[in-house]
Structures are given as structure tokens and as C-alpha cells.
Length: 78
Length: 291
Image (cartoon, rainbow over all chains, first blue to last red; front, side, top):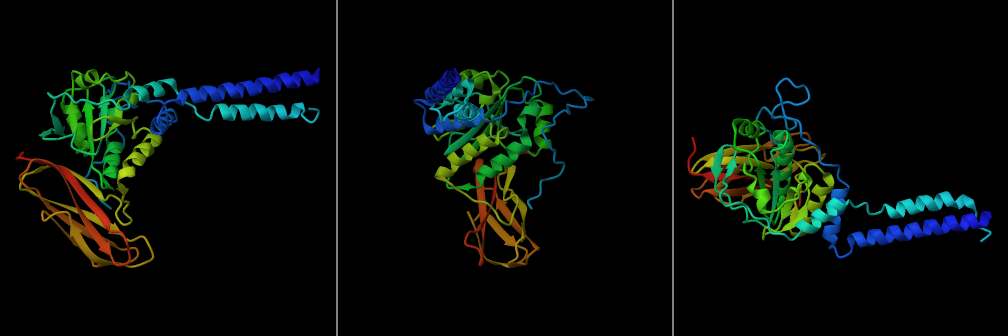
């Protein structure tokens, strides 16, 4: 009985690996290496941040025209 | 079979998870890349290009590669513009020798006071196109997600890669790999910001910029010579020898000629102790007189 369970589990895992491998292959089939690299880099990137909040003066979390550190003087080249 | 026991099952499960997650691909990413790669991107003819609030003549197509980013009007436009990271990235790509890389930001907005002041506050001196009607998106049938609104184009304006390099280091690396396939990346050892975007320069005007060359090493650097890209550029250095820990200032002057449009000029400074020169570059746009 124990042997049987073990065999079933093993076969299930092997099938899962095979299906995953096939699915993975079908996802990239026909694509150029550059396209695959592009898709992988997109998929590895964080989701696009939602800049869906309108900037209102006085709102502590949204400074009008804020885009990161604002340089108030001419950038130096050192 | 008797040698296999249930103890190996967890290992097999872990192995199967690892194997199945080797390529974690999102369907939307795959579709966007498939739909956009190789597609020719068309710029609306009727829209002009500006550097901050000054219209400029800009032949966007005339370059080996172009980075184009479209920012829609939803939500906080100035937040999604990411001007400071774009500034750094554009100047970084300009250091790649042997290829020209053009840049264009298209805003789905009118050129209002807030946007112009945001560009000025951030010293953003790169081409921007104002497209309040959203013609660019419509003309090129872009996907709805802003994640696919930034693209790297080739010399024929065909999409080579998709994704926003200022929001993802993975995309930035991919863009850099593509660009350095045909060009050479020049990193500066002595100057932290070897590229300066001058923005708009009046025809006939002379512009002067200084570059600090800091010797952080243990050896003395002796200047061997300075070469410039044209007679319109002159460069002088404050000291012929830079001791460890010292800083020398290179002053570069650029005399703008009378032909309006984009320019990119450089000075190379050679040291006796170094094989490669320090490559210092200024770029911008010449216009026929602004006030």
C-alpha cells in the first residue's frame, strides 16, 4: 500500500514537471532570444506604479510637480 | 524500488516547483512584446517638439536607436514623468560611443504652466511632445497598460524592445545590452557626470560648462593632451597634473553655429598613465534666437 502511494506521488510529480516544461516551452516557442529576454525582463519587473492620485496642494503624500528629488540649483558635474 | 522511500518526496516537490518556475512569464507581457516588436512607430506630423517652453527642430528619426515614452493624462502626470531618473538615463545612454540614441517624451496633455515649470524645476532639457488629443497612442494602437508605453526603436522606427527603463533595472539592462551591441560604453573614471544636457542654445552663442575631474586613486594623473570634436569646441584644464585626492576643472566652451537642430559635441582628455581618454560631452539644440 505504502509502495503504491509512493508510486502515485512520484508519477504525479513527474507529470507536473513535464506539463510545466511543455507549458514553458509553448510560451516561448517561435520567439526570438531578444523577445524572450524582453518578456522575461518585463515579467521580472514590478507592476507599473499607479500614479492615479491627483496632486493637491496640502496633501502630505502628493506634492505638486514632485518627480523625485528636485534640484534647485544647476546640477554640478563632479 | 525498495531504495526509494517517502523521504525523497519533499525534495521532488521542491524540484518540480523550481523547474516549473524557471520562466515566470506573464501573459500580458508576452502579448505586448509579440504585438509591438517589429512594428513601426509613427509620430503625429502635426505635433511639434519642445525643450521646456521653446519649440525646436528635431529629427527624431535620424538616429540609430530611439527611446520613446508616452505618458497619458490619467492621475498625476508629473509623478509618472519621472524626470530626474530620465535625465540620468538619457545622459547615461549618450555615453555609448559609436551610436546615436534619440529620446522623446510624449505627454497626453497641453503644455500648461504646471508642466512647463515641472520641466524647468527638474532641469529636464530633453525633447517633449505635447499631445492632448492622444494621437500618438491612437495612431500606433498601443496597449492600454502604461507598462508598454515606453519602447526602444531602431533606425527605421521599428520596436526593438518594450518596457520602461526608469522603472525597472531589468529593462534598463536589456536596453543597454542592445545599445552596446553596436556601440561601446564609455565610463568615466574621474568625472561623475561626464554628460551635460545644455537644452536650448541660441545660434551664435557661446556656452561654457565645467567638469570636475576628481582623482580618487593612488596614482598621479598627468595630462597628455585634449582633443575636441570640432573647432566649435575648446577645452582647457586647470592643472596639468592631478594628484591623488585632488580635483582639476576642465572648462569646455561650445560656440553654437547657425544651423538649427540637435548637436552633440565632446572633448577627450588623455592622460599619460591611462589607455582610454576621459570622454566629456555636451548636447542640446540650437535655435534661431530666443529671448
